[in-house]
Image (cartoon, rainbow, N blue to C red; front, side, top):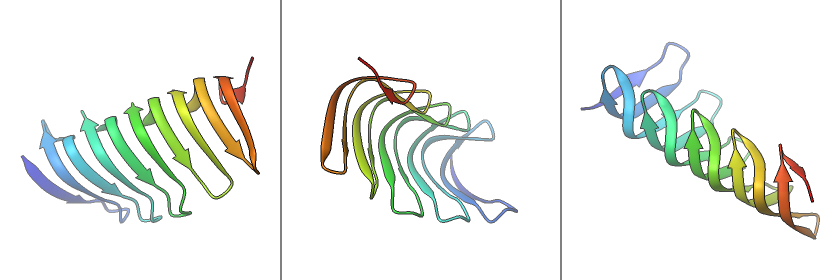
Length: 114
């Protein structure tokens, strides 16, 4: 079903529930100002979603076990990356734009590789 949970920390989850866990479409807002809008499975960010950070940075793409994993795009004031992610790090084929420079190619554990 659908419901809202107000955590004692000040965080809030509003969305679908199953077996006492967030599961389905939902929104998780942290007291820090960060916000995730998207899919949840068994209480974790899994599937497609968007994370909007209080800094203005944001990630849009695929998630697994609360981390960017699969295809996604990270936009910040200092750089823009679109491509493959593995367990929260740039990993695989991608494109990075930073300070006017553009790198297209392989990444490994968050670093340009190849």
